[in-house]
Each structure stands twice: as C-alpha cells, then as structure tokens.
Length: 245
Length: 242
Image 1 (cartoon, each protein chain N blue to C red):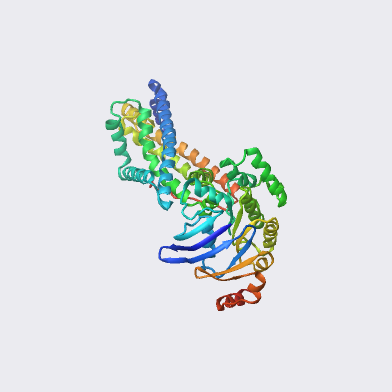
Image 2: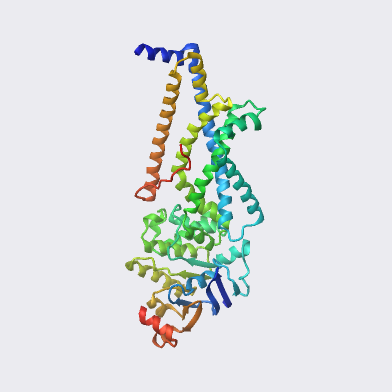
C-alpha cells in the first residue's frame, strides 16, 4: 500500500522532474483565473451599467439603446453556448494563429465570465434603494455622477461575496481550457497520466483543486463576515450564483 | 419666486395632479397637508423636477423650468432647491461629513477644504460635530434627518422642500427635526413642507394648502385654515387628524 503511494508520487512528481510541469500548469491555471476575473469584472461592470441605464432611464438616448442591444446579444451568446465550445472556438478559430496560451485562456474565460458577472452587478445595482438615486439627483448631481459616486460603490460592496463565488467557479472552470490544448493544471495532469499509465495524477490534480477552492472559500467567508460587521447586518446576504457548478 | 400654472401629472392612466395653480413668495413658508394619494408629494417633487410635469408651467425666478428634462439646466435647477426625504436617504457608504461634502465638491461648487469647513460649521450648528467621521448607520433617526437637512443646505439652495420629514421618525425624535426646521424658517429660508405635523403648520406656516385628489381644495392662513375650514372635505379631514 505505502509502496504504491510512494511509487505514484514518484511517477507523478519526481521522475523526469515532472514537478516542473505541475508548477507551470498551476501557474497557468492561476494566471488565467486571475486575468479572466479581471476582464470579467471590467466587462461585467460595463455591461451591467448599460443594461441598468437602459432599463431605468425614462428615455434612454440612441447610444445607450445601441450599446444595450450589443451587450444583450453578447450575454445571450455567452449563456447560450457551452463553455467547452467557446474555448474550442477561441483556441482553434478566433485565435488560431496565436500560441500564447495565457492570452487565449484569459480572453476565453474573461469573455465568458463578463456575462455572468454583469448579472451579479445588475442585481447589485438594482438592490440599491431608489432613494439613493433620488437623493443624489436632488442635490444636483447628474446621472453618471450619481452612478459613480453613490450607486456603484454600494452595489460593488454588496456584490463582493458573489464575486468570491465567481472566482471559485472560474478557477474550476479553467480546467476546460485543456480541450484547447492550453497547458493548465488539468491538462498537465492528463499528460502525466498518459505517460505513467496510472490514475495517480488525477487524484493529485483533484486534491490540488480541492485545496485551492477550500482556501478561497475560507477567504470569501472571512470577507462576508467583515462586510456584515461594518454594515451592522445580522446575517450576510447570500446571492445564489447563476451557475450550476 | 415660484409660480406654478396649470400643473398636471399623470402616471400612466392615473391622474395624480389635475391642475395646480400656485405662487410661492420669497421667504414664504408653505405647508401642504392632505390625505395620502392626494398628490402632495408629487406636487413637491414636480417643483424640483424629480417628477417631470405632464403639462403646465413652473416658473422659478423668471425662468420656465418645466421643460427641463436633462443635462446642465436640470441639474442646476435642482441645486437651487434642496430636498429632504421621508427616509433621509443618507449615503450609507460615506461618513457624515462626506455625505455633506460630496455634492459641493463633485459639482466644483467648493474646494474640498472649503466644503469640509462648511460641513463642520453646519454640523456644529446642529450639535453633531462629534459625529463628523461616523457612518450614518450609527446615527439615530432624528440625527440622520438633521444631517440630511444640512446636506441639502450645503448646496446653498434658495428653496427647501420637505417631503414628510418626520413621518418615519420615532415620536421622541420628531421635536429635534422640527426645531431645526423652525430655525431655518426664522432665518428666512423659503420652505415648502409636506407634513402631518399640524402644530408645525400652525406655528411656522404662512399659508397652509389642503390637497386632495390632485387639486388644491382650499388654502388659507393657518389661523383661519384650522379654525374655520370652508370645504366639507377639509372639515372632514381635520376632524379625523386633529
């Protein structure tokens, strides 16, 4: 028994310096997650502000109407196409000439994440009491100023726990990048499995994801607690994610 | 100072205001009372264009503002009319002093330093200077509403609109808010107050308007208004609330 484990560890990590592969895979996974989240936040914020402006303004102008149409199509596309197909499209069609794995992965998952984040943001913005907008406008602030100075800071704060969950989903989801020949963690594990002919690497990769997720969950919980304290809320508001995973 | 002619406001099929004609003079204190759903708040909110009139004119200092819908003119008009809400609407993510300085600084009406000095002067006046760095969540209802009032004052408006400023307060906190409003009144601020505080209407009001079903049914000086109501609807209303 012990011998089997030792051999599995040896095969997966030590032989042929495979730990280097693992490290590079882990690095790729974390970097893709990070940049995709960043892109998701920026895109999501932009999309949500446009959608909310369009829906709440009495008479949205032409620019907003056009932008709203574009972002609606964007959200429909992202939600309507399986992630795995999106990754294949980015890898082998849209960025077929590029071999920059980090770029492909970040764009694919950032593009995808933006749509989901925008819904989180939208909920966050709509959850802010109408009186806040009225107070801002009654003081003479414009729509955009009210949005930036009053509504968004509160909305983003309310959304932070949901972003933590998005971060976790994203981390796991990047494993799909392996179908696009991107050498992230899952891909690395699968390559090594193909060489050692034992299931060891799969157990190890599962454990690594689990540890990462547990750690992130711990951080999110801590953040929720801290936020609820400063709000004097009794319990942190939990928003359900849109994803099933 | 404010002159309203034939003001109407519809929300879809519902006619909330059915033709208001009213003139409010500089320094005048006008109190608006009436049953809920009668259009009091909507009338008030039309004055600073929080609601856009369906028809009619609103003249403010020789300027017809009723057609303003967006942009600079609209925002400039609102700066001249401070508004106080039933639910205070302080900004919970900003400290008390930031609540007060946000608008003057953002609109470049004052430098950060000047705005902060003004804020402290105003807070000192209402006895809340020690709360300057606190967040609204730590204040009582009465304190919140007083901060909301000075937040509006920081924009140096020429008119103050009060939309049921004491209706959401615990009874023991109503007094402190009314006292501040009385102070303001004595300083000569033009005020339009929607309220259920009949005592305040009697004491401070120059005129009291009774609104019901979208029109001003009756108006008079407080003395005559309360002691000698003319219309049956007002008699009925006063019998219920006083």
